[in-house]
Length: 365
Image (tube, rainbow, N blue to C red; front, side, top):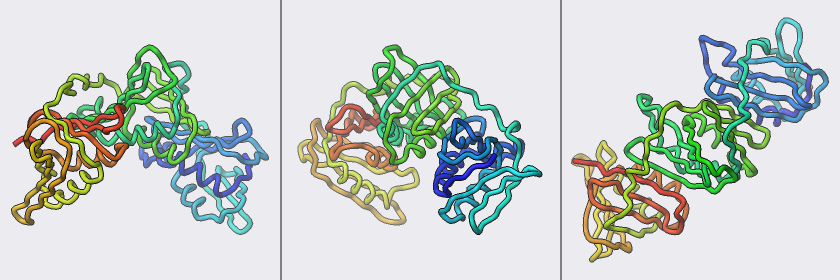
């Protein structure tokens, strides 16, 4: 193999795939990235057997070929090189030469044949949507997924495909759901994507725009966007029927400024106790919403907000971190808090749209 490419292009491509290659002691090849000439471009690929990422890079190909090198080493090397054209070629004794005018490096390699075969995902349930919409939606729900591996089915994000696409995540203490319009199916299908795969999807899309394509079969998913592909295993198991825990009626609705809520929560959180709790009190006669937290060692803080409140007087205790997570990702300037009592789920939704909801359970005791 012999190719000529720019340092910037190779650096960007390695960054796309590099985080998937890990530190495997049992299978050293998983620490490597595959470099392979294919269809007039250089294909770069990495996998940890759960997720595989491939991306294509423009280059001048003088000799076809393929080789694998340690991901961390080639990443560190290319990051340190000047932004010049690089000549990359295989040589005797299983080495890869990377050279510029004044830099000459050889890297130890492993043959392509040792690299795991990445399965294809061709036939399945397919949807297309704007990549920027997908990234934004993933960021709005993924933080609510569980980290408890004893319940693997809720450690990922649920994709419910039909006339629209519903994304949902929960850790049983909170729930986030986002609805997206898609070019998709009229029949319904559900898949659970692992949290790490969701992170990679969001990272790779980044600030870019364009069309994204998702294909799901019974065990895997394929994501294609802007010359990059991700193939991931799906999470086994049945996702809980979360719709049944979302109340359909509420006794109180509070209309508030999102930024004022964020400011109030951050202020009282300084004095929140170990369980991140803050007390929320509301009064329709006073049209006032209050947040308070107290520490026997540090002191006490209370913030009063003037709000539009419909429906009585009451109080409850919430995990302020859970609420801030939601508010930080929600669209719009105003939100609605929907409450029944201090033991039922509280719903937080944007005032001006109906495509997102966030449910949080009160803290008991």
